[in-house]
Image (spheres, rainbow, N blue to C red):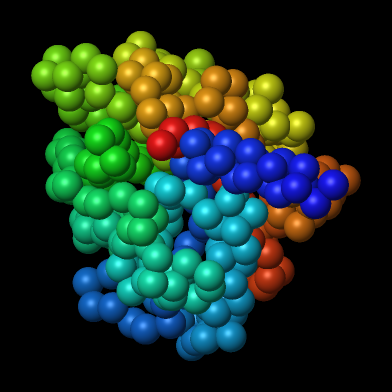
Length: 317
């Protein structure tokens, strides 16, 4: 009996060694600011002296919350963040939990007036960074500068993966007025994807971010004409990643290239997921909504006004 058990354990171990499943994820963390006043940035809303009384205790509670999400998502090999103030706050995330010493950080300062940027963290025990950069698109007047698209190329075994993290301009002013700004962002992203696929049609690309647009809008459709959307209404029980006035919609996207569906490192089909675990949700005016950090000026102690999205990645040895 003992010998049979040893054979079974050996078989299971060999199977797990042959293939493992991890995730790639994206999360709009909702205003992850430090408590320090930064010149030339409009970050005064998140200072201890401001009405919100943002302080170290609240800041590190938010860091712990983000770490809990990373763990919930099975420690993604690549994870994109938006609404982060600087590289230091992302470093606090990766040093604040079980990721310490295992994750690298990619961040570039954007021209966004509020000082919020995009960033990428990655499992540096599994992958190496080949190169990284930004796509900075010019906004015509009277539009103000937006967040850069952050991209990075990784090496995982013999495979290369290109990740793009986006946070497109907001809908402030309404959809018709603000849409041209997102079309500018989409044009920049599409040109980059086109250039990659023209040089290498089998390239593995993962495009992710809060696009401030729904899948049926023009700007996201520019990207989905090249890449496969992995997040839809069917990806989660609430049919969305964000709730506005009681209406849910998919603002947070992950799309992949055809090349990322094959090979030793590939995205599992139909694995796109909107992660709506219980502790991320709350009730507001009779509706179930994401449990956010603030409701106006009132501190709620929650996580974010967006839900994280993810896909499963199969890694074959």
